[in-house]
Image 1: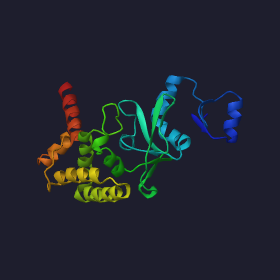
Image 2: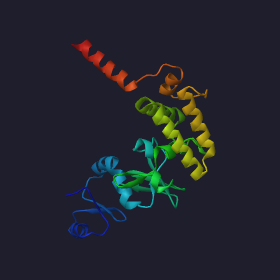
Image 3: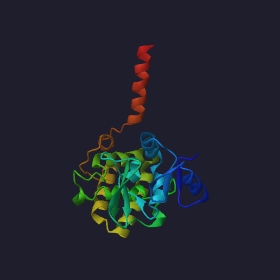
Image 4: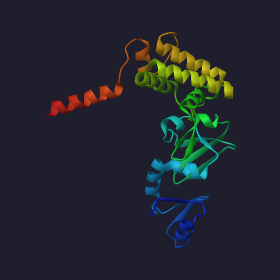
Length: 228
């Protein structure tokens, strides 16, 4: 049997009447009996739930970048209303807001997902940062994400990211965060001098970029060689 069944389709009605599946949210059913296993499966397949249970919502903020629960245990969605819903041990926090245009979104397991440019712009809205609200990615981590774009795609990719971010900022009235984003990108490219926090970003800005993933691989190899 499948892990999840949705809507009022014939197969769902059949298994539901036989007691083989159970309802965990409006229009969402599962064949998983054990709550602990359900939570583990939900951690991997939560976008599928969003696609069916919150069709008019958009995965946003840090959730649209990290694709996992925030440190406080939330998946953040832009919605027409604000509320928090727990499904299978995953907490979905719906926040009233305006999503970027459909042309800028992408699909994740069928769920509408805000583009990275919009998600990073949202994390730079300084006035809304609160310790109790972790929808915003820490600035240092955000800077490292931008440095990663530069490492993988070069200046062309990062400038393209900046241009699209500007277009979205005009569309949604995010002028201030776009200005901050432009300062960070300019610093990474060496054309500006903005105070940055991310370890990788600082290395890039000071002329000593590093590939932490490759460093980790070398350290792992070194450790292996020492045991041979």
